[in-house]
Image (cartoon, rainbow, N blue to C red; front, side, top):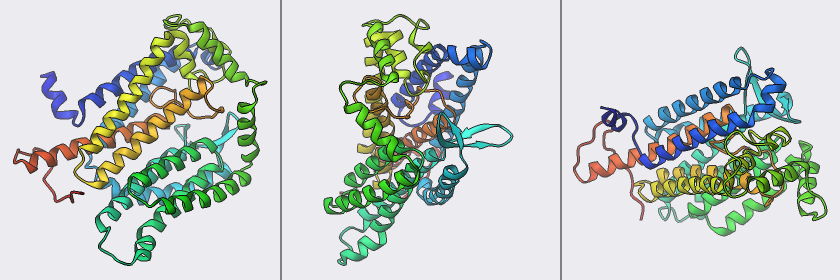
Length: 397
C-alpha cells in the first residue's frame, strides 16, 4: 500500500525525491546543532524552538515542492512574465522600505504572520522560467525568419532587457545573488544557442548597468573591499578564520553531531557558514557526502534535460538545476576560503523561510518536467497515460 501510494502521489524522478529527503534530514540535524547560541540569546536557551520552526519550514517547502510537481510544467511559461512584473516593483520596494537584517535590506516583513520575505527569490525563479520560455520559442522559430533584426527585436531584446533589469534591481541590495543570477542567465542563453557576440554585448551592458546599480545602492565599496580582503594574503576575515578553525578541528570523521565548538563563535553558523559546521561535526567524509549530493542533484537535473521532449522543459530544468548547484558551490567555496565572503545561504541546508519555499518550488518544477515528459514518452509509444492528456510538443533536432 505504501509503495502504491508513493507511485501515485510522488511522480517524476524517484532519485531526485530521495536526494531532497536526505538533504532535509541533514538540514534538521545540522541546524538544530548550529542554533544553540542563537536560542540562548533570543529564546532563553529554548533550543527546541528553532528545531520545530525549521522542521516546520522544511515540511512547508516539501509541500510546495509536491504542489509544484503536480502542475504541468508548461503552465510556468505563462506565469513567468506575470511573476516578473510583480517582482520588479517588489525589489524596488525592498530597496527603499525593506527590513534591515544583519546590515542588509533584502527582506520585506509580511504583516500579521511577521515572516520575512526575500523578493529576489521570486525574481530569480521568474527570470529563469521566462528565459527558458523565450529561448524555447527562439528554437522553434530559428531559420523561419530571414530577417535577423526581427529575431533580435522579437525575442532576444526582451530576454536581454529583463535579465539586465532584474539583476540590476537585485544588485541594489544583494550583490552576490545578482551576480550569480546573471551568470546563470548567461549560461542558459549559451545553452539556448544565443550567438557569442550577443552574449558579449549583454556582458558589457550588464557590467555597466550593474556597476551603476551597486553605486546607487551603496554596495560598490562593500563588494570591492570583500574582493580586496580575499586577495590580500596578509589578512583573513574573522568569519573565514573561525571557519578554518572549525574545518581543521573536525578532521576526517568530525567531532560528532552536536559537538561543534565554533557554532558559539562563528557568525551565522546556521546559514552562511553552515558548511563549516558540517565539516566540524561530520568531518571531511561528511563534507564530501554533502558535495556528492549536490553533484547528484545536478546530474539528475541534467538527466531530466536529456530526456526532455521539448525545448522549454529542458531549458527550464537546466536553468533551475544550475542555479541551485552553483549557489551551493559558491557557499561551500566561501566556507573553505576559495572565494570572497558572500551572504548566500546553502540551498536545502541553511535555516531560512522563503528560501526553503522557493527552493522547494524550483525542485518541484524540475520534477514536473521529468514527470510530464515521461508521460509524453509513454504516449508516444502507445502506453496508457493516466492523469495527463497527450499534447503536441515540438521535438527539437
